[in-house]
Amino acid sequence: MKGARIAEPAARTPDAFAALYDEHFPAIHGYVASRLGRDVADDVAADTFLIALRKQGRYNPEKGAIRPWLFGIATRLIAQHRRQEVRRYRALGKLGLDEVADSHENRVVNWVRAEGLQPRLAKALAALPRGQRDVLLLSAVCDLSHEEIAQALGVSYGTVGSRLSRARKKVRAALEEDDHG
Image 1 (spheres, rainbow, N blue to C red):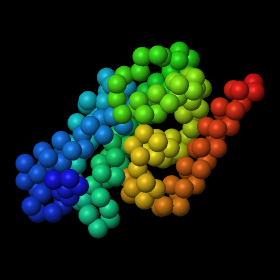
Image 2 (cartoon, helix red, strand yellow; image 1 turned 60 degrees about the horizontal axis):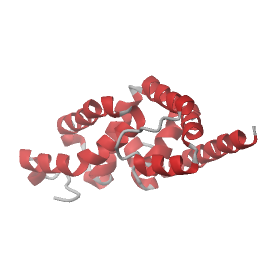
Image 3 (tube, rainbow, N blue to C red; image 1 turned 90 degrees about the vertical axis):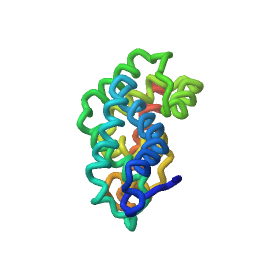
Image 4 (cartoon, rainbow, N blue to C red; image 1 turned 30 degrees about the vertical axis):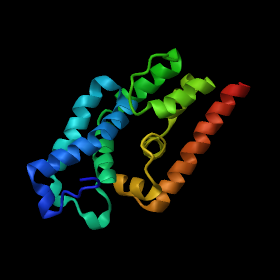
């Protein structure tokens, strides 16, 4: 069922949707946990699939794969928790928490910890505008391509590139400023 498209008539069965859920839930949950924390991730990830089930008729496979569509739903739900996300990054920035929950974020967090950058990176992420943070984290945490991010967020490919470039420059500058400041 890898890469199933729920818009296909054969994929609209409960078993097909369950397979889609089983395939993509861990990645969606990990993404949400990396942005909002594990305590909220279960609900937001479940809501992502509830919305997908309700809106399955609106999904157009000609516009792209199901994976970025699901990440787009999750990102819009995360936006509803924006203040909580910023507080989380600020807290990580102040505390430099050693015990970050096991989740998809560990790809980034393990590298950050190894480099001793976690608090500074968290502060830099908290300071980014939402659109830039969304693009950066969909790229870094979820490993989505520019095209998939554009589909997930409903923006152009060029917008993804410019937001990602700006976000990287701001994060790099914030980390360098901390090194020199």
